[in-house]
Amino acid sequence: MIIIKNFSSNFILRRLANLQFAIGMLLLIGILIAIGTFIEQDQSIVFYQTNYPENQPIFGFVDWRFIYFLSLNKIYTSYWFAFILFVFASSLIACTFTTQLPLLKKFKLWQFRKNSTQFEQLNSVNIQDASANNLAFKVHKKNYHLFRQNEKTYAYSGLLGRVGPIFVHFSILFLIIGSTWSAFNGYTAQQIIPRGEIFHVQNLLKSGNISYIPQSFSWRVNDFWITYTNEFRTNQFYSDLSLLDNRGFELKRKTIFVNEPFIYNGITLYQTDWDILGLKIKINANQTIQVPLKKINTAGRKVWIGSVPITLNNGVKTNYIILVNDLFGNLFLYDNEGKLIQESVIGQPIKINSQAAITFSEFITTTGLQIKTDSGIPLVYFSFFLLMVSVYISFISYSQIWQVEALTNLVVGGKSNRAVLYFQEELKRLVQKPKN
Image (tube, rainbow, N blue to C red; front, top):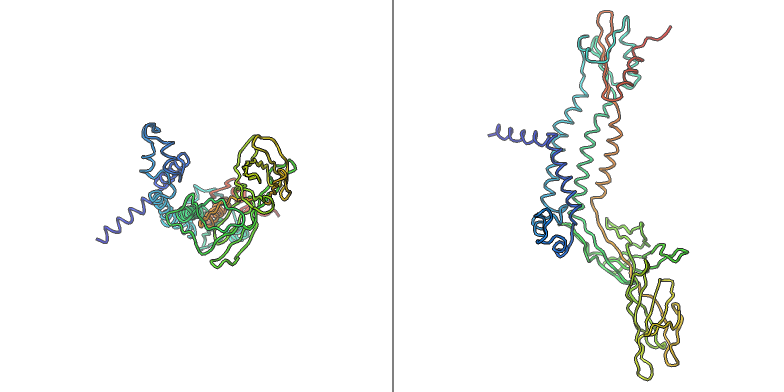
């Protein structure tokens, strides 16, 4: 029974460590990622029913039911994709411990050559009346690890270059672990928050199967403002945010803008958008109302319009149109026939007639925030660092030199896995006798 178990485990290890198997798994993962790029991920069922209808399947069989059945709408967080990544990671681990590490140990072993016939396949040279000690001294000065046994000598240099493949394997492993952990544990939310409001994370765009949204703290939008260019176009928009604990005490405060997020305990808040929700208006200095504004895109620019009803003393109710171009504070008031009554700014009263006057007191603005957590990002970054290190050390040549004394001759040979011409020149310089 033990023999059968050992045979089964060895067979599985050999299959996992097989290079063709690993390449096949990598190709399969690449194809699945390409499918995930082609088929939109984490959309609503209505989206897939609209874009992949049953009566017009792609390639004759890909419709929304097919996509949902195979979880192609959430490939990267599906359990079968995670299983494929696990098998590929197991293949890398098996290859590392059954092939790469034993090879590394083999390269560290002393490999003496006993006679001149073993030098036939090397870059070798016969030296008359040469001193083995002198050559060994030269080799040692070139930072070779030197071993001697009677008349035989073995030296190697650049063993670190043989570690490169192992570094590549571990970098891919860290990349798989980090990206998988982010996919299953991360989430992304998008929220539009009015200035002055306190909010918790809601409106999830996507979330992992084991993601957790902390409820032990909340966020507050203290302020929001925009800077403009000389051409009156938006230059940058800012949000002053505070992180609050359950008792409402401020834990951290920061002003964010595009490319300058708020980061706390792995949670990142990005500035993404903004909007004008409405206006606060004073009527006759004794009544304050909030007027909602609607955004309209025209000629590549944004404008906001709203309607304010004003009841005159005679009881007649009249609607006036408000037009806003930006947050500079410039506003335009029109009557219901579209005639401009007056251009105004925030805080300046407008007299409608002898019976009514209005003052635009302040904008009600909102800031667009994206809340995101990617707990596996540090591992992903570390994996790319390891990959860069592996690329660098892979250029280190692993060179070996042998020498054996045969009567009055000294036979010297060597080989290198990289920079062969340079190694041949170096070997010639080592065996060259000094000029008198």
